[in-house]
Image: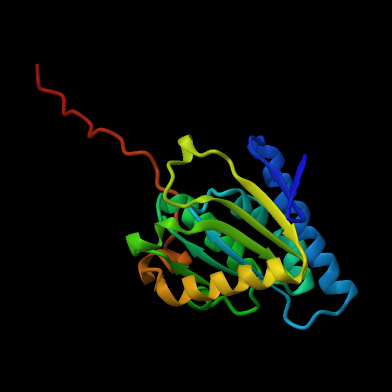
Length: 196
């Protein structure tokens, strides 16, 4: 693994390994929050979609994060498909004593924001940068850059703050978890039998 400016860089990394790396970072943040008694520990994420590696890792570690009081704020550039979005919102809601998704998730709907890169800041020690959010998920070059240290975290937090300000609230109809239901497959209407 090559090192660039104190960062870990892997050009082509399997998705499962990347998810594991994010889950490890989130678990470590939860541990630090408990060990160091961190006041209001926060993780910030800029995600292409609710299927991005950090979002999947969040779902895997939500119990540990909730137990340690870690809050997550996220910016998404895609709010579909709704099923993935609702699963991500459910993970975010599990971290909140009183679910208030409006204060924890925004939508980077403006096309000018598509040059931003996916990013996650895991507490005070680690910042991850991924591909540009405008890239097609199937054609991404899988940029994975983990940087540790206060300078990397500060840059990540400043970028998140600027993107948060430029983003919009997610439409209320998408945030309403009470409307989520599993629909039954539609059946064709019964054909009436013709009298013989």
